[in-house]
Length: 109
Image: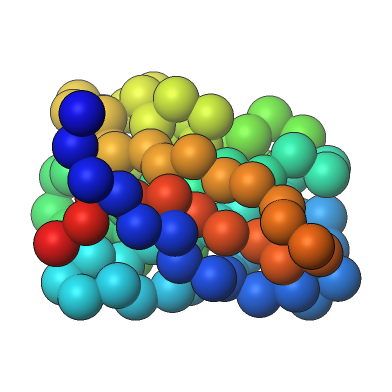
């Protein structure tokens, strides 16, 4: 089993439904989304051209984010690429709320 580390993102009150928060851990940039109360975390990097997904249009009802560069859409629940030009998924990470704080679990570096 690989070693992991938990990253403190923010207070759960600071990430309302429809909001996105970006956190950086070493060379890894993570986008944390609140989709109508459900929390999801993905690598903030489009697999097509490394665009910043957190800056794209986010539909919290459908759990879809679109890359602001070329419009590739990703399912934030699974990381799956839904539309071209992206065809590879983005990495996803477990998200929890502990003592009112949102934390994301990532591989230790």
